[in-house]
Length: 91
Image 1 (cartoon, rainbow, N blue to C red):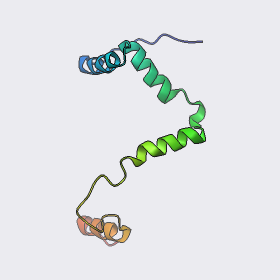
Image 2 (image 1 turned 180 degrees about the vertical axis):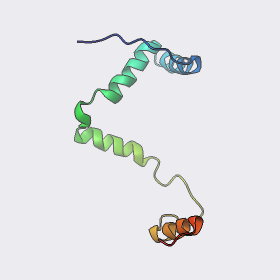
Image 3 (image 1 turned 120 degrees about the vertical axis):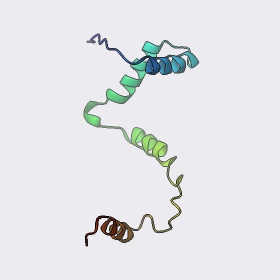
Image 4 (image 1 turned 90 degrees about the vertical axis):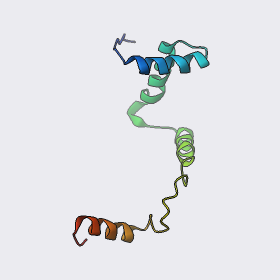
């Protein structure tokens, strides 16, 4: 069974959808429907191992892309000390 959903979106959002859809040779409506189905059609959020592996691979593309300039930026003790100094409290 399917339902019809009608809603308004800002022109600039629709324009973005339309441009991306045109690049793929689709209508904006089909493009948006594919996004909705891809992101919200999972039952109870259960993903297959392959889907989890693919999602992790996508996420890992961003690992290490930022350099904070502080070699201790991932040190939890240092983070706690920085927060305590910022807020004037002992942790």
